[in-house]
Image (cartoon, helix red, strand yellow):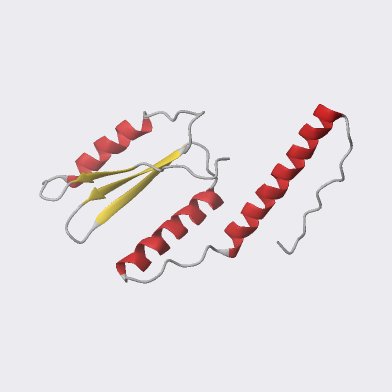
Length: 133
């Protein structure tokens, strides 16, 4: 897991084109064949099709996210988008995302302790995870 990653967002302008659905279908077919580089973050990308001055279509392609993660990611992304449209501050990070980050940090601390044990032959106490994270 990386702390930060640049997420590519590409834009295709379909405004003024007569058959938008055909163009989007062709793009989706090509996108299905685009590969991800497994050793390079992120393992997802976004594309926006501008359909008109008032309408767009957002497509997310991912290599390994589960349904919960996709839902959380899109919820946060769109909440930030609409806040910016309304010239408001972005919403706070949801509690579930904060818990996931804390769990990941605790898990990494546990891995670090295992590496230390292998390197130095010492025993360290286990990491206890609080249900109140």
